[in-house]
Image (tube, rainbow, N blue to C red; front, side):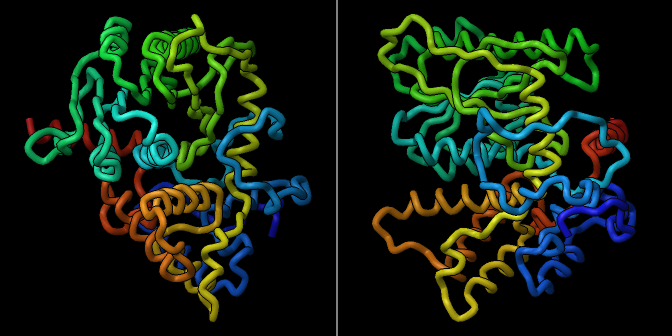
Amino acid sequence: AKGGGRRARALEPLNLARATAGRRSWRAEFALAARCGDAGCALASPHAWQRVELPPGAFPELDALPLRRALAEEAPRRPYRRREQEVKSTVHWGQRKLLLAELEFLTEHCGEAPLVVYAGAAPGSHLACLCGLFPELAFEAFDPRPFDERLGPPRGPKNLQLHQEVFTDALAQELAGRGTPMLFVSDIRTANWQKDEPQDHDARLLSDLQAQRRWVESMRPRQSLLKFRLPYTDGTTEYLAGEVRLPVWGPQTTTECRLLVTSDPSGSSSSLPTRSYDHRRLSEQLFYFNTVARVSIYPRPTAAAAGGDGGERKAHEALLACGLCRCFDCSREVRVLEAHLAARRPGAPPLEGEAWAAAVAALSRQLSLSCGRGPGGLLDVVPAPWEAEARRAAKRRRRC
């Protein structure tokens, strides 16, 4: 069904992405999805089941939306409201979100520069995988916070240098002085919506944005992938012009994107192009994204149907088996992985049908392992982040 006025009992617990005492896995939901005769129906995509909260008939475009990686200027809007007591089925996985955004970025631009500079990289659990997928690149990661211990010697990637220090304007100027073409990634975050007062939170957000802007203007990376989040309050912010990329596996109510900025490497222009970003517009566009676009059903890539003799169905089942349905997040992951696999096989015949699905599923499982999950990967259900942190804190206290 495209919507429903009443919450279905089958959707208890209220938040399907959170572990409970009796439920630690999506396996039952995905087994049910695999039995659906129509792979395009909502039941066959468990991450889309929160659709029962949508008013019946309110979004006729549902399941006919294009699969977009960037937020269009004219993207639909929906007024924001709190959703604490609504069913949620979309999945947040922070390290996987970063890894997929950076994997797509480097797949597209790895030929433009030999060096990747990463500000705000800690803990960086996903970096070992990223460095392994791009052995031809050198990575320099900066953050004052501790890095994942697996990244350091002797086990860490040989093409990764860790710098446990704050990324500063002086450091940006030093890197620019090397004259080495670079790609720049930033995930700096001093704002904390759970701890900051509203005014402090907005001030920290804007401070982070302006720091990123100074660094990009100083270093002139060939391409930059920047953390991009605006204050919750109404207003506008003048900032670097770029492509606002939608998150994959972002928080269920996320207002954070990535901004892709292309620089003039010659530095002939004293400043980079800017544009005005409207806070309310972006907030309402992302509310529509979180509540409608993320739970729309998207077609599998054409490679899935190229196998013939039931190959499309088998490919679909192979992806379901590793937790990839046809919701937005799963569909975008599949496209990112497909593009990376193709880029790493230049001149080779394209993968099709079951062989294509097996390659995508294998890379997806590799991402899961590198992001700190066991072999269950996307099929595992995890505690809420604050619950997980409370458990880690209790474990640290027991060790003391």
